[in-house]
Length: 133
Image (tube, rainbow, N blue to C red; front, side):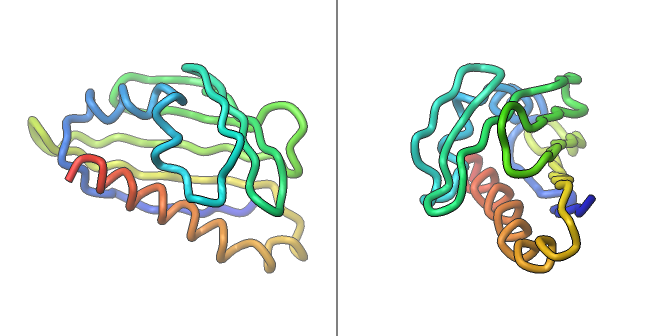
């Protein structure tokens, strides 16, 4: 299992606001990189294509208000993965969000995809901050 993370991202919104936004996959499209196409989502699941790579599907596996949202791979994916968003209140209109992305990769594949996967997590963090700037 390989882990890619971004810890304690400062967000200028309350934990409740950010939790509500991230708890609905219909909002995730605005966080995705431009290489993502064929976006389809309902509140608790989504599927999409990464140009030149693969189709992916995921679903929300658990929501714990203002504490954690767990997302897991679903259906036919090239790898199994789990992404957790953790929330930490920092006042009325500020919170910290940590993203932890665990991916089941063999050692050979890990060396090839580590940089792009860390970049993906960093991009999610950046776009989340921009949304609430």
